[in-house]
Length: 262
Image (cartoon, rainbow, N blue to C red; front, side):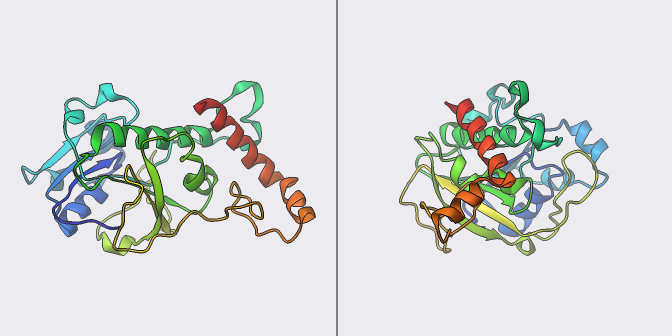
């Protein structure tokens, strides 16, 4: 994750604040604003160990509770501030459901809710939080396992986004953030430490970073970008894939998401 010390950084929905605390202690940004979706009381009740006290030690830190990135009314005066970098670590709308039933009777799936959350994050990040004269970077760190891999982050989120563009991805190296614990969103439990991926967006299409980025994968007619499958060796191979339960489920996710954003 590319971060420079002179940057102004905003973190979104940082559960127990351990990421923001590690970021502050190990990267020394010029200014850090950390936000939490929960109230302070809810956070303290949910997590036995948290980093609230570590983020109240400097005038260049700001800590905001009850912050919903999709709802400007919850931001207070924050939308008057501007940043070089906005980060959303392992976002997840809580609660899961049986995916086989989401499409009945107009029900919106948790998969779609997660996509809509990330879409709002990118739109609001570009519109309200990024300084037009700054570094102009938005990061989303997620995992390449279910349910996260079913959001199709590098493809779906780019649909109909006019002012912010996908640049590529890079491995997230948690060892660079000592003390950071990935938490369950609902309870005081650590999430299994699987490999993370940081996806990068910017309003600047030609934005260059010093680290090599992986571009979109599984593109073209010989691949399935929904399922990240292929290359297919023949038309019948592709047809067989499209008839699979996995592809049909991913297709329904895509169809519902596209319908809602249109």
